Image (cartoon, rainbow, N blue to C red; front, side):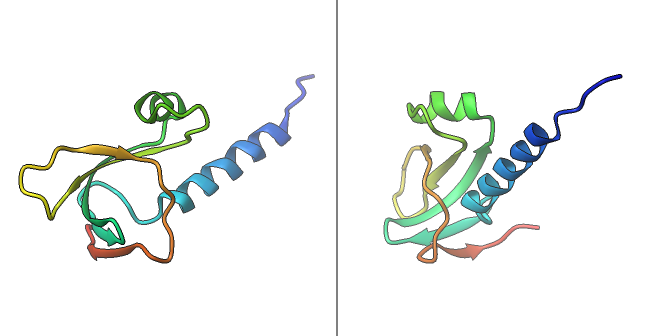
Length: 94
């Protein structure tokens, strides 16, 4: 008889939900702004190991690769900030 650990599965699902809420509507192609500027999302990394490597933070659960749309010649860079009430979608994607 196999014993199934539903607690771990539930904890994983809860963490996935929290991370999804923290990422918010940011997905590739979305343009959003906040007090720091306006950004186009190039990629969303949800693998915690990769996010930690990219952001150089031991507790990172995700990373969002963005590019500043207001600066010509800007380079893409990663952010690990959560979606807040001061963030606003300017252009959504299907």
